[in-house]
Length: 329
Image (cartoon, rainbow, N blue to C red; front, side):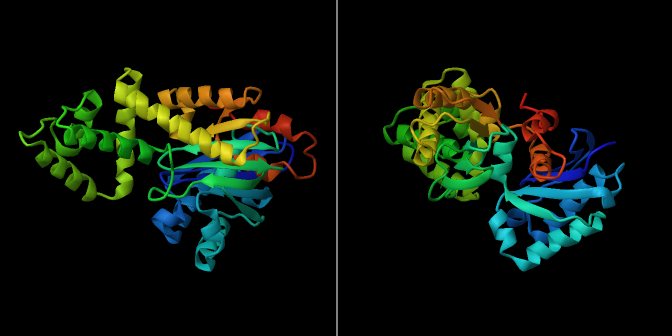
């Protein structure tokens, strides 16, 4: 083993991933645990998951040899502003045997770094929520949207689900029978696709089914929209097209029209082979024809790379990135 050892973590709402690597490009260990976002799970539970992932990744490594670490975290600003939350993370870090310093970075920066080593560019993320960020010198410079389900997140999984329900409601208001996507939405939310003789009764039942749940649960309907769009269902295709337009518009708020630096696509709706990813890529190529498009990849490895890139002995950060950060499949 040669070079310094670093640790990277990608902490999300559903999973926590850790990677231990060297500054010469060796992968020494990985770990995975449950969701570790302190905003959604609380600082103590998040710290427990962090500790679990770290210990697994450090199984064959002496923690005292680790030189630096980066934690990529949604809601990083809130953690840094909360002394109790930061204390919980500090204790988890030390309980894993680590004595080196660590920094907390926003998940958008880690997503960007998982797609490219370029210091300047743009990352566009669409999962349950949606956000665009401009990166300068591998630091977040400007952010667009990410305003949450009530005020923004246009083009997100929540947005797709809400639009699907709204189209069904509009059909019922017109006394039109919903199409294939609408039938799937009704089945998902009501347990059947039948429309009552008086369509307003179905409207009322559908509204009640939605409002009984947490609003963000509408994001669970996004796969229905995506699957229907794959089958060229007209309503789904229209919704996906509008979502792509919203996401591209968010990027345009912070990205110059003549920019040629990379665009990284992150989040479950954009890293896979989905109709939304395809539609968005076409729109981004139309707006920025000379910009390379990249997909976000291994977030934990990207966090480790961010920890390593400025350490002594790292002469070529881009070459190290190529060794450490696996591209999206």
